[in-house]
Length: 144
Image 1 (cartoon, one colour):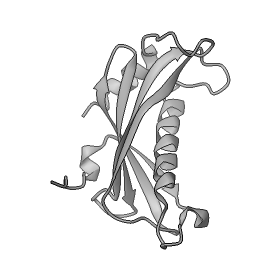
Image 2 (tube, rainbow, N blue to C red):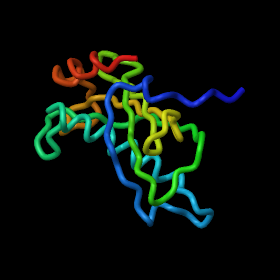
Image 3 (cartoon, rainbow, N blue to C red):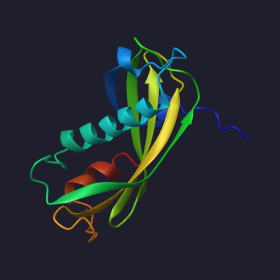
Image 4 (cartoon, rainbow, N blue to C red):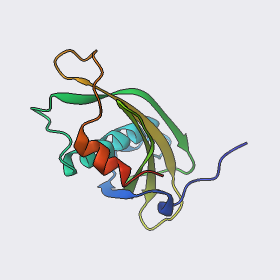
């Protein structure tokens, strides 16, 4: 059974992002690999805007250990996309984001997905660490 697309009201944090000509594939819509690129940008911008991530100096970093995406409607250049983000699981050293891409002005998600980050020491990238305090604070406000 196919799940109905989520709505903007299901998400808590938003970012506007333009599509690019190169995002289209031969079928005239955005290729699925680009959905993941938009999701990745959405999460990175959330982390940067909340002071969680310093690209050059953060001692703890989140590694993606699981992703997924459901496609509800095509996106295409020159669509303006709004990415929506919420937190669906907050663990001791991991966090799962619920993500959506909305065509400008539409309430129904064109695509929905998830990313799970596990936080590790940047130097070793194997030893898990607790979520950074700034992330936990920002994430608690976004829990679905």
